[in-house]
Image (tube, rainbow, N blue to C red):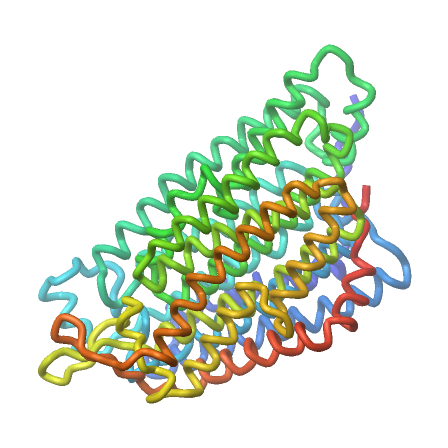
Length: 523
């Protein structure tokens, strides 16, 4: 029997993950020792600082990989290559903007409940609000979720993939149930997300077991090497990969695994919705690309029909259901489903150009998504007594915002135009590059359907723009709409997202050139 040889840990290669994870653990400890008055400020500074430092560390590791080449870390459990580092950079940018929105007190109050343990509508809940309690645990939870997201796309084994999946998912289940208003709806959203997420995890585990039985290894490269070498066990291989892909399709909200998306997006605190909609999709899409491009490139004929069917259903159903929505958050939720279908074209393409194309699309989509949900947090209802209540989510309540708050309406219009893929926005370049890669990979029928779906999707984006700029404001069911002031962090987040959306549309070359170096996965 060979003696056990512990793996060598390359600490430098996992520096970005260590920074975020260390800050999350430190944040948990600070919750127990810091006075209540300074706890929130310290947690916000720690979270923003950690994400910024991790982004700098990713830049350092990128220069190392460009100079020395990709490598395996911790005995192959983690891969450090161009796609992994580029994904981490995109993730950290979107997460940093998302944390800025979470940290803001729009209208003088947090987006999160004062006490998660208080029953909705109870005397204890009223007491926690009167005492001014703040649920600052959201920042360590967010950092823990980001930790899992950073590891997820760089997983070199199915075991690492599963652990990263759980680390990123469990904090999100909690965050989804912490809304300050509509708490029952928020808790329902968290429960649905948890239950359906548990099913997705079970699919991943079952698929992992089948792939291990097929190849005798959990490493992606060894599974890939076994594909042409093994004969007579194709059923294990196809079933295993299919089950793992089903779990990942759930995380990106692809049809028919999308049922959780509208309810969770609507019920979760809006800053969490923006963070989750952007960052979870980034991490899950890129690990899906690694799995398909590394393990299953020779199985295109076997997996192709399933992926084509899922992509078509996701694009069409997401667009059709978004057309009939009158709630802004649910419209953006089904829009997210449709975008998942567009992004699947890059997975199906099996072309080297598809990797930087998908990364660019994810960056443009992530910035616009966080920015759009950030603006939703500022638009509130006002009752007949003049009290500001919850968010104004009906599209009719956004009528006339272009006249009363032109900057807010213009920013929202910019993000919606980017979603629609209008030229001179990042969304247009993102769609163009992914569609080009799909055509190069022979999936031109999917591109035709995607273009038609994009054209139809423009209707519900433009409908909100028309309401903001060309419709007279008016009370709806006795309520009026007001834009609450921001402490400044939401304004900064929206500004970063808006500038990024414009720059990616006007000057995409430098970003595409950098991402072009991230085209090859380490086999």
